[in-house]
Image 1 (cartoon, one colour):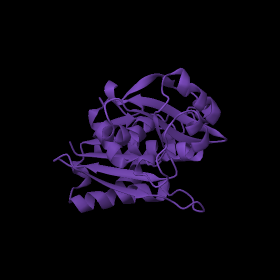
Image 2 (cartoon, helix red, strand yellow):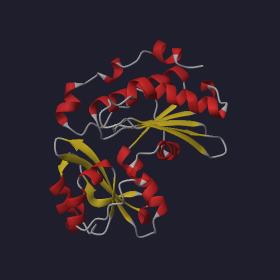
Image 3 (cartoon, rainbow, N blue to C red):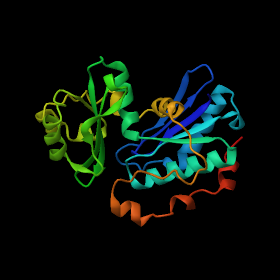
Image 4 (cartoon, rainbow, N blue to C red):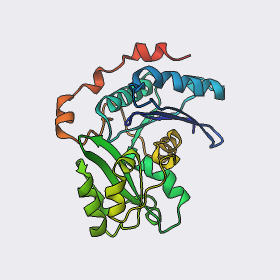
Length: 251
């Protein structure tokens, strides 16, 4: 299934293109610490570049998959609005996947059957978004490690012993930022340069292929996970790029 998947929930823009033979092309835009994220300006261009590399026209896409977060407010809005607009203009299936699960997936794929992975995204304001997953449960969330709200780093660290997740592998920009707290709680954090800390477009595609699409497009909304963010933009996703703007970006 030819699937275009992308995630804009962190500072980076990650795009993947799953080909008919199961291979996935991928591209990333990682802004420097003094640069603004380029979600709005780079996302469609990166997707177009991957399609051109694969010599696949936009019309051949069969599914659009997007990371729903949790993550940064502006990036999530751009990603979800773009996914909805593309899927509607191309008349293809649309699916959303958890960014936390996508972040954990490469670590789980490379781990042993008993590995546990905690995905941690920096939520700013001294908080993180987090969820734990286990390879033996087919990447199902670990009991007690699904958090419906942002957590302080010390709260997450305190949850690891209570849920039997001591020794888990912690990945993500939140794990890097709060390495000391997580390691003090018994978690293992890979080196800063490890690709396991990055949300991968290929993981979005893989989870997107496995997800069951729903009818229509309006149901797809970001997982802001902060009540104030969600209430402040009620209906705002639908005011993203128009269908005409998205069609203009297609070859």
